[in-house]
Image (cartoon, rainbow, N blue to C red; front, side):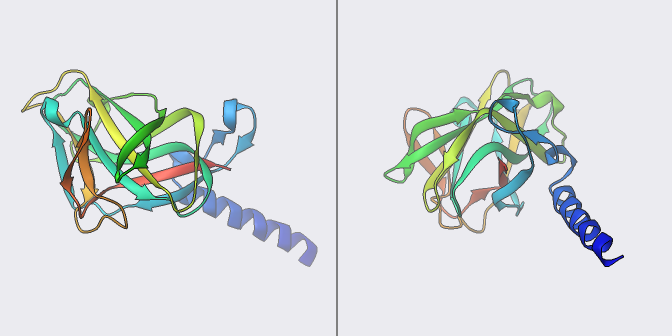
Length: 196
C-alpha cells in the first residue's frame, strides 16, 4: 500500500503546481513545438494599482524592465491589459536587452493580440514567442508593448502596472527612436514564462 501511495502523492503535487499557473498556461511545447514541457512562471510582479493609457501616438511603445532572477528560455509573457471604448489596434510584446539603463537590442517579438478582445475591467493576456529567448540571471530586460492600429482619445488600450516600486529596474517609459522615462518607481504587472 505504501508503495502505491508515494507515486500517487507525487502526481497530486505535480498537478497542483501546474494548475496554479492557470488553465491557459498548463500545456505547452518545447522549441519548435516538438517536445512536451510544462509552463513555469520565472519572474513576475502581480501588483495592479495603476494604468497607463495608450491614447496617442506618443505612447505606442510603452516599456518596463525587470531583473532576471535565474537563467531560462523565455517563451511567453503575461500582461494585464484592458480597453476603454472600442479600440481596434493590435498589441504586440517585444523583448529588448539593455544598455545604459535603456532598451537596446531587440531579442524577440510576440504574436499580436487584437485589443477588441480585451475586457474593460482588465485581465491577463498571454503573448507567445515563436522562438524562445535566452534570459541570463542578473541581467536587465525590457518588455515593450507595441500598439499598432486604430485608437484615439476615446478608444484605447490600458496597461496595468505597479506604481509603488520598480523592483530594481528603471521604471516605466516610452520608447520610439530613443527611451524617455515616465515613472522611475513603477513596473508592469507581468509574468515571464519558460516551457521546461
